[in-house]
Image (tube, rainbow, N blue to C red; front, side, top):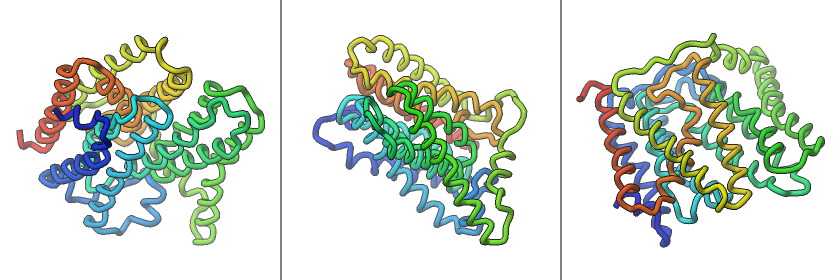
Length: 328
């Protein structure tokens, strides 16, 4: 019944998404790591504005951004016809998956960065078949660059506007130049802020540089097996599901999913060069995984399979968290 609640026609999901976020947040309260403020070296905005904030403030931010992200990702999916209408499962899975980041501390900068990325995608996907999309391209590029100031590894997504323009519409040189301007504008503003504050005006670039290390092997920590296995299996099933429906889906839906696949590739490859390690390997693919898996589980006509896979994720999530902190 869990999946059925989020895949309905009476807008019940609008109420259930914040309830799901509260349950994930409340469950994290029993985990010791969630009550501490971890040292963050991957966020320019964190280091400038939030470095001395209290744990209670971060706990509040965590809940608010989780709810906002759940609504945003579901809105992106429905507005741009990525998944069926009234399918709130992408939002539910995103809330669940980002809950895995709570093992890093009370608040992780990738959570607000994901909010900015989702707003950027909302603007970027609007360029499909538009004759002129100057404002949309600039806004999306600006927001993706801004997201990198929230969480430095998001810098890998600066290529996404150009990939989207190649896939979603004919080539327009003005849009490409405006996209470049959008990418540089937040960095220029950050440099001006640092200069006026008598600080190194390229401090944010040092943060981005420090997050990258030579190619390294993946390391899986205690308790990661269940959740990684569930995600990998369902992601491959979702790709097979997407390919099987490609001929019956709208052209826009197909193209938008291709952009998301390229985003997945960029996020996945970044795992091998990012110095920061997470409980869930691949924090930069959480948006893409949530959309594809939510679309697959929400779109399958087999109610039993839909409920089984959703319960599988819930069990894997709970057990993995409890194993990670030594409760199991």
